[in-house]
Structure formats: structure tokens, C-alpha cells
Length: 250
Image 1 (tube, helix red, strand yellow):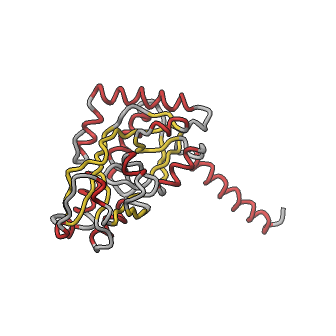
Image 2 (cartoon, one colour):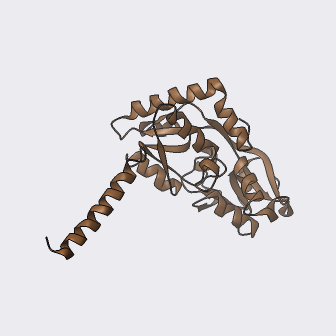
Image 3 (tube, helix red, strand yellow):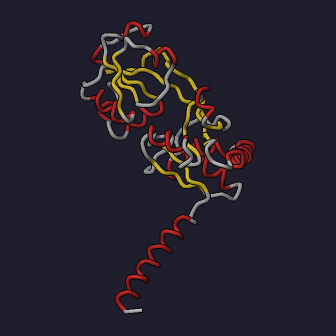
């Protein structure tokens, strides 16, 4: 083999081996959007939810890698089996044909938020027609809210984007998880910390899960591994320890 060809071949083998070795660094590839403080690539251990999931599998001798992308992309590609599981799914019965739901890992409470300076008050969703409301594309809040055609809903790719638009008065109201708005108002948008109002009407109090794709051949295996590992964690209180370490209670 000529020296030039040999050099090209060596480079090719090096790249191939590097890629091949990287694929062996984990057993399962899961997907998630960035949803701090639940999970995000920049949080310590990728956030409390991600840490619980990874530790449950670690107790079963498995290593999980999480790919962070948009919610819609994570949802659709996991549904098709490109990723084996999806972090942080609410329980929605219609999704059961695509996913197998884990035991409840925690709960999410979704409210409507506005700036105090706007003096917005309401007791029912029907009173919100004058306002532009920020929502996240692909999220399920409640049947009444999601199905309403009268409400002026602006779709964004993340809660963070909506919170920013609320801060600069591009939106009058935003839908957000209580932990999420608390996180962003103390990190990215501290000027909002004492300016926002949580309205009493709760859109949703719902369980949050890991969901396993039904498009993969070993759905039941991944499900059982998580359930076994998570049961051990709960018995020892390890899940609560992780949440407290990240500054949250169950």
C-alpha cells in the first residue's frame, strides 16, 4: 500500500474506532428537552430527574446517556424508536399506544403567570380571551385549555422563551411549571423575581414519568430494569435524597 493511501487508511480507522468506542460508553440512549430544574445538560448531574433515572439503571448495571433537544423532536423520535426512552412525560392516556409509562417519579404543577404590574385577575379560562398566552409547543396542560379555540395562545419551543417574552411585555400570561419559573427567575431573569404573579387557577397537577418507546424490541426489559432500580432507590430514600440535594422536596 502506498504511503499516502496508508495514511488515509490509518486516519479512517482512527475515526472509526473513536466513533465505535463512543457508542460503547452507554447501554441506552434516552432523549429529553431542556427543562431545568428537572433536567438540563448544564445542571449538576443533569438535574434531579435525570440523576434519578440514571441511578435507577446504574443499580441494574446499565449506563444511560441523555440527548437534549426540543420537546417535539424528543417526543417524535422516541415514539419512532430512535431513542429508547423519553424523560419527563406527563401521563396522557392517548400516549400509551406509543410509550410504556414508568412509576411516578415526581409531580408537576402548572399555573398561569403574569407580571404584577398588569393587575390581571380571573377565575375561569373564559375570562382570558383578551390576553396573549405563552405555551410550549407539544405540551398538554388540560383538555379544556388545550382544546379552547377562543384563547390567544402563542407557541414557543420552551418555557424559558415564554418567560423572557413575559418579562419584556410581549406576552400578558404564560403557562409554566412552578419549579421552572422559580428556577428562571433566580438564574436567567433575576429582575423578574419579585415581579411575577402566580394565579390561583391551577391548570394541571400531574405525575411526571420516564416513558419507554414501544417501537423498540426490548421495551419490557428497559421498563423492568428501571422499575427494579427505582424501587430500590425509594426503599432506601435515595430518590428523596437526590431531590433534597438539588434543593427540592417531593
